[in-house]
Amino acid sequence: MIYSLGKWFSVLPLVAALGLINTPARAQTALTIMVFQGLQNLPLLAAQSEGFFAKRGLAIDIKIAPNSDELRNGLAEGRYQIVHSAADNGIALKAMNNIDAALVIGGDNGLYHLYTQAGITQYEALRGQTVVVDAPNTAYAFQLYEMLRLKGLNAGDYKIHISGATFKRLQDLQSDKRFVATMLNPPFSLLAEKSGLKDLGEATQVLGAYQATAGFVLRAWAEKNSATLVAYLSAYIEGQRWAMDPKNKAAAITLYMNALKVSEDIALGCYNAALTGMAKDAEMDMAGLKNVLALRERHTGKPTQPAADYLELSYYHKALENLSSKIGK
Image 1 (cartoon, rainbow, N blue to C red):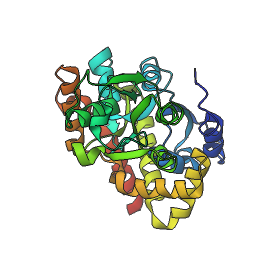
Image 2: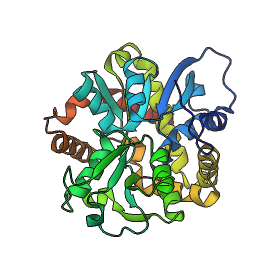
Image 3: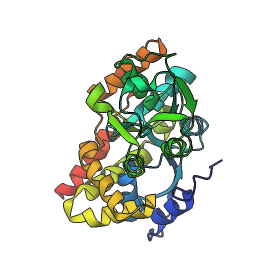
């Protein structure tokens, strides 16, 4: 089930924005992908609009996640073959549900900032107040808890409201003053700024390196569909290269405007943020991944496995090899 995401971020405009390409007449391998809405989807937008998936025989149906539970459950149940979300969501599948998922590609550092109601300028003002998270036990919730902990606020010093995807958390702060803080990234952080919410700082500036967006799959599916996965990752990387090429800047901004339903200035802000936050060729940030694991251990009180146990990067390396060999021809 896919939920309605509101007038700005409904599934239909994204599908329309991504689907207007001519595909080859040959049979296509269908893949259903789930992602959260946001600037991190630029490689997908580019790969779809420029036909990089289609030329590899892939027909991609992209769904927008309402929350991390649906994303993780849908992957585990086979409704989605590949998902792109916080790396910690993939780790949570193993840690919480004993689902053998593997991170197969990186993405970005998240570009998440802590935003508060306009009158709040210091962390101490959050004591006894209600902060908003997607899920209470994954990813950016851990970022929020750690940023608060480092400023002297521990679990129990504030209340937690479970909301869902980033756009929902922004809506919560804008519509209800009882909710005082949440983590936001572009375009939602840019919209928050325009609406008068207060930026208390970027997570990576406080916490250090962080592997945010990553692509992950079920290991069993990857083993049975290795050629398809390599083709998908090849198209994804090619899409990012195309989008990061300065000569395609205007087209990339238009992709953001159409997919996110935002103004040109907000789309430009997303593009500029992507230039700084996205890793080259969506490479996995190992220092950032280790920090993800450290935050999970601290805020769950449970040990994690070594970082390598959550990875299967052989498909990614094969995709890079394929792209390199084509460039050399």
